[in-house]
Image (cartoon, rainbow, N blue to C red; front, side, top):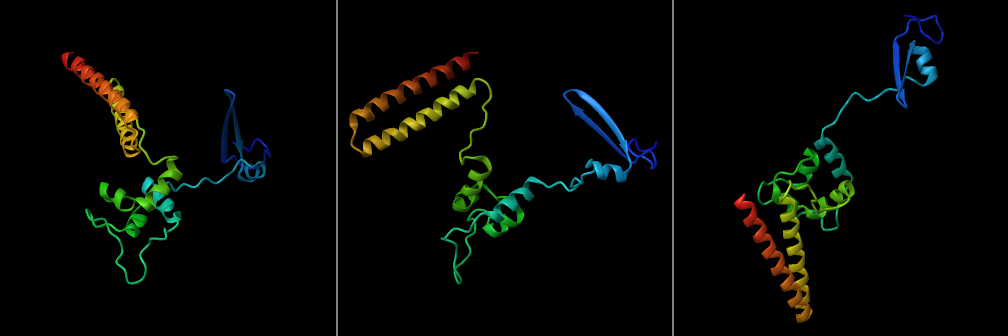
Length: 179
């Protein structure tokens, strides 16, 4: 097949474009494809999530509490992994690593995800129960703050809300167990 542009060289580049559900095909030679800008090199190298995370970790600025010369490098007490090894591998060793290296990891998570708290999905009816538990925890925290500020009337109202939500939660569990 000859190039559709110059009609002199063999067509070695086959371009298919779909725009607004309209499909067009071109068969071009290497030279004409380069001239029309249809020949762009796409990197064939794919990278894993660990490689992506490693690259992101290497861009995180080192906090001011980093160990100085002569001090031991902080390692996870559970798995023994150091932050430099986490940067190298692109993977945390265990759940304790999140707490141990919180200062270095939180800015990275905030940059990648926009937040540092997990907000995943919950299946079906359990989503309501999980949301109620979160609400109860938030109310308990508000209650602790109110007590600390000696706002006892506000704390009592929060206590009543907590009890009401806990009662709803128990009743909904009872209904689920009967089904």
